Amino acid sequence: MRALFQSLAALAVLPYVLLAAMFLLVREAAGTRGMPELIDVVLAHATWILQWGIYAFVALYCALVLLAFLPGLRRTGALCIFLLAAGSVLVICALHSTAIGAGEILFLLPCVAAAFLGAWLFIRDGRPLPPENAA
Image (cartoon, rainbow, N blue to C red; front, side, top):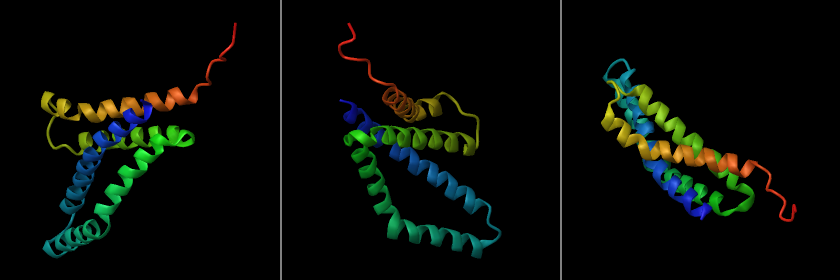
């Protein structure tokens, strides 16, 4: 059941990671000075996305799911999900151009839930198990 929760959290987090990456891309493009530099930035990122970005997205999802099913690495997978979710929420909130309202909070709720799930799974796996025959 734990692996299922972690796999669903990975599936929920990845669209927010893409959105946060797009926010960072737009911020970088907005900081350019002139059309040639803007075209250079956009083409550099587009080339990378078409060559490696699609594969990196699939590889990231597969790695997060694989970490959920490997008992020795479950804690690492939970930490990765927490860091990706929390980082995505921070980037989206920090680079949002207007005040965050109820609609934005509702939109970010699955990512925040995935961050809490990742943190809970990380903390839960760090505690020692109680002895089975402690009576």
